[in-house]
Length: 317
Ligand code: BYC
Image (tube, rainbow, N blue to C red):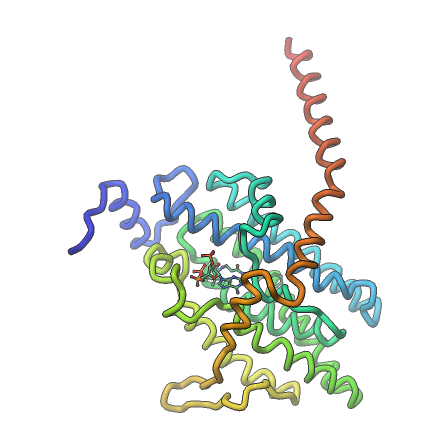
């Protein structure tokens, strides 16, 4: 039997169906608010944690040009985190609470950032595959039903596209380099390929949130649909690098009009998501340390703000 919706819930779903954006002061089901806070805050945390594996290479980039590009990219990720935290705040959660959830392990962030960046080739591969997967997932989010999230995503996607292009550009250079550089490139692809596929989340039949999020148009494509698009694109792009993807089952399927690909190790995925990946502890420790070391800045800023307020109150009296 179809569930009866309250008049507000009915009006809400009609707006979604007509592609009218939901704005912060509009009525929304509590579960919609909760799902958005979960997804947007996890997305913000991923951007901020994502700075760590890349920051690892700023001091070791092979030229001034590559260092400047990497520095700018890492700064962009901080900006993305800030737009997203601001979008989540419009739903009634404070930034301090979101940070607390991250630092105590209550909130997730993308599994991908729990893998180490071992060589310079990893920086290019992260740009190509990780930013590439991020764009595949995030371009549809520019049309997500919640206005502040959709608007934040427009700018983020422009910057992510640039990141992806610079990653591929640096790999093209390596691909024309010495045999050692080509080996380093293939090794980085081998290590990042499968974790990149895991970024899209569990398969649709194992994804508890997809059906409702599609109905609310928070998500515009399912995890498996986006993963397949990503495989199709990468299977062609890798040829330009003269490299291969580490999947013996990767094969064009003319009937489906898509590449078939091998089985993903979901045990590894859940292991990483539940806190036991190669770098989970190191990542959270780095964020906690940054939070603690920044305490004096937060205290000084709020002391300054109270002083200014007091001054203004005296002037107004
Ligand atoms: N890692 O029901 P599901 C980036 C969790 S890119 C960790 O399918 P949903 C960047 C999921 O949260 C990366 N956890 O969930 C790129 C859920 O747990 P809870 C960030 C994952 O939300 C380059 C459970 O598994 N991008 O930031 O419908 C440089 C069941 O999953 C993962 C975004 O966040 C994962 N890979 O779909 C720098 C994009 N996958 O919360 C930075 C926005 C799933 O129920 N997010 N889980 O306990 C989304 O599009 C969706 O949230 C997802 C998951 C497709 C990721």
